[in-house]
Image (cartoon, rainbow, N blue to C red; front, side):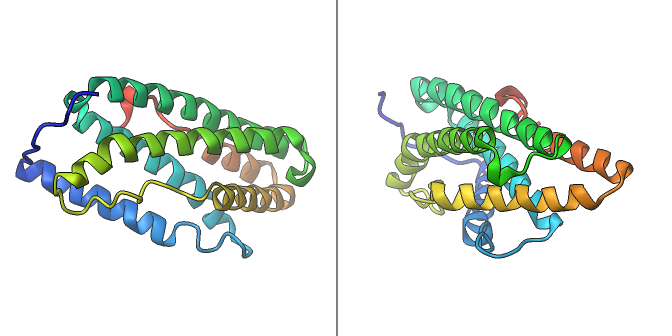
Length: 199
């Protein structure tokens, strides 16, 4: 891997990174504080929204430092695409379970897809942490905590499972109009392509 060169931040880039990294720290500080408690439907959607936002923001971070290590960048693109495919597939599985009244606790397909999606998501964020964040931190860049992109897979699985169960309860008691709205909201949680991340 090519050695990283000294990084010089423009004022605009420094502001952007400060905003992004503050958001990531906040995300890890409060994101899954309720994973062991009952959650309401708005929090259930926010869990998936946070996953989408985190992944896409990290993709933007990778783009910012593309030229520093092209091989790491290429690997990151592949890892994002793999995680995106699994997470979007997981969302389709959640929709399937809701429509077909297939309880999540009894669905081996949901469980396996969730485990795979979380595993690939962790692989992507760990890669960015090791190849982008840690090298920047070693060069003295302020605000880049080496471990901020790491997550506990078990807690993430629990959080998403709790979100799905809450959606199940809401869906079953709702009428057709609300059900269609819920499925549409889930479609909005799908990750965009790497190229489209950040607009």
